[in-house]
Image (cartoon, rainbow, N blue to C red; front, side, top):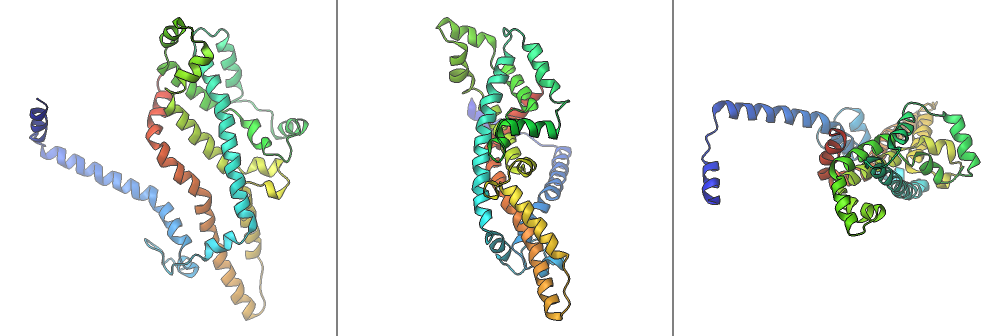
Length: 308
């Protein structure tokens, strides 16, 4: 029977309209893919190209005058490697704290028998529209003794109400109360049910939260700019920002002699090349992480945000 079904499927005749429709959709999606992917591809090939070729507009599809000068100049700064490690540590610690706060909160608020959940939910939702502001937040962080520590970058944003709401909807639609009632007959408590049953069934939403929180921690620099004074504790984004500002200042300098002008022009070209290298360096971890989470992305977002 299975072979007959496969044979019938192979013998299905596709009409001319179907072929035209599929061809048009394929062309449109290909154009969209090129529009979306080409800027990133251009930055990648520009980071490996001769700066003169980049400035002359000769770099289109492949690197011109292949070189690693941009990357070598970036990594000559001793802070780059240290800040990269700092960002990895901050991101890992931050994501663990975020998951440790968001998932239990979302699970508790998704249970029908949890009294007072509506009031607590509104307490969280209000924070999405009203905040204390920069100065009160700084004073709170200072009074807690978190200034110039990595915890000042992690604890104030330990939960995102939007992410918690998505996770709550996921738990509500995918972890029914009947499942807990069946487990409670065998003496399973809420805590044990959450860790041994609910979490293993929530891989999709957990992967999405890791992606959202991880990207947020990795790309954040403003909090570090406010709270971190020790340059040895700076994350990568803050160091890259410092390098770019320093280079922009160098671009504004003028030279009087021909030799100095030539050296200045060469330096300006190298600075432009370094910008592309910095973009690739700061984006690389995200580009590596996304393919591993992509298979959970659609399921986690659609189930957690559309239903309920």
